[in-house]
Length: 185
Image: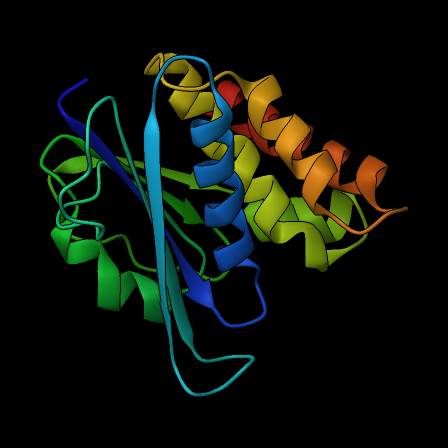
């Protein structure tokens, strides 16, 4: 890994992109591998439906700039977010697109994966509200491949972060996201 690995999750308000990035950051900070993490967020004035993004920078050393200047990994859940945020993906990076809401692939020099993130939350789990946990499962698989974080670290942070009584649903959503990313490789 270079000095830093940048992750951006983007979509619309109400999709839980901020919570997803907070969980990644907490998982990295809690690891014993000496990782540092910083999380930032930006969203439009609308609480729901407006453009939203959240970023996490992970590094072995100090993090001198908290924002993602060229994300190595992006998970994009809406076409609007794709149009707005995909252009600065790091060369050779990874872009994961929701195959329901994102209709056009971005023109970037990166590996693009179209995955049924929203459909999985809606149709497999019966609750679109866990879209962010499905997205986290896809991120976990990539971070595992990169040797940065173990999936169980993220799962444990999810269980500690979600409302009591929803742990099983959120854990299943995470597992489904991990599965669909692993199958797409």
